[in-house]
Length: 576
Image (cartoon, rainbow, N blue to C red; front, side, top):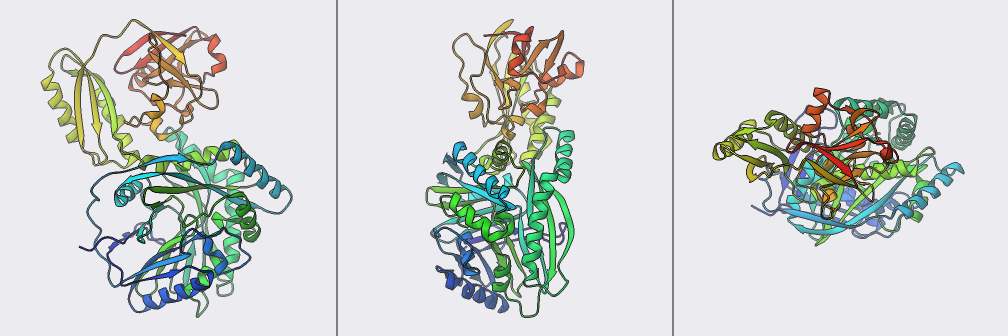
């Protein structure tokens, strides 16, 4: 089989229940490339002509292609072709899972001081009436090792659904798992679906629904969304039949693995003779990644952002035989050039945006690529005592919830068989069981001798907040533990008591915490950013613990401490 040049895995934009457009493509018949703004429209015309002749065309436009359609749109000098399309005579079946692994060691990102300075500039421009909104972005940069298609598969597991595409141009590989539709154009009907408005996923089902409701109703998020809807309505009107521009859906919430996003639909009927180049001329770049008004927003952002955005914030898509065209807005997109990896992150800044909130939104949006950047397995640690697994069903239920969250295949019978085999091999004594489930859904279980728990332990307070407190790798138990391992304990100290950036106590690095405060044993709520431990859950169910927020500032009022987990049980502790 020819080497894979492109993969397309797109949702049906008009019918979520319809089969996905999911194909592979081998060696192209030809490639169509634009290196200068003057070449972009002819490339798009050639793509449209090839489609009319029954060919498949897959490719991209860089964000820096914008001046090809309007010289007033300010951009940096492009770091590659402005447009690139591969032409194929047929689509192939989706390939088997890519062999090999992939890893990215992210090494640099925007400094918080620089971020705050850029925010201040944008907020002043908005206050001065120059802008309504601007979509500020920055680039993560890292070192890549492994197979690009294996990384693409990991990215799809991390960010399933949406409009995913893989393009190998020879000089670079583009791995996009964007959830955002730029436009879908079929016949005279065109649909755009700008994505504006973000909220973090909740730590519990109740909190998650509360976050979604907040996103739907928050004035800041609705204002951010409607500004871009108005911009898209205006852009579409340039190619639309009179009075055909409509907004059939406004303020729809979409659940992604780490965030809720708000979308709205803007539709129109295109004028007779409208070309693909005309559509891009009216819409590109998508207003959701520029701001409003578009010309001034792009001018301001180019002055603030030090480098080209590249394909990030441009467009990646497919023109099918006969002309049906679908492009994404390539957010959630990784660009590879040899060992160099790049991924853009950004958010819309409006008058009521605050640096701390936007910085946290950027952290939430990074979750998809952090999840895919290195292999990990789901993990449960159980106590096996005289042939009996303590709280076995609770541990399996928690692992099943993690598997659902991460998109890991789940087969109950495989897990139970692995545990049964282990228990029959260790019918007596006390053992620490380490149960793992890899990304392919294969379990493994090992047992290690479990030494007796001490009657009392010493804990130390972390000297800094756990920046990743609200990460999915805190909420779910996995082998990805670098954020915990960074807190080392000196001799004689059992564990470290952690706290989040808001100054709230969360948990210990290896278990949960119980605190005696005002005569009641309390434990921090999940919303503070911590793992919902099995020992903690049992103590809550039995009424031995209740949830309460405890701040670092209040620790002097705590009368007693206890370390709690399923493996060790309840161990009285002293904070040193």
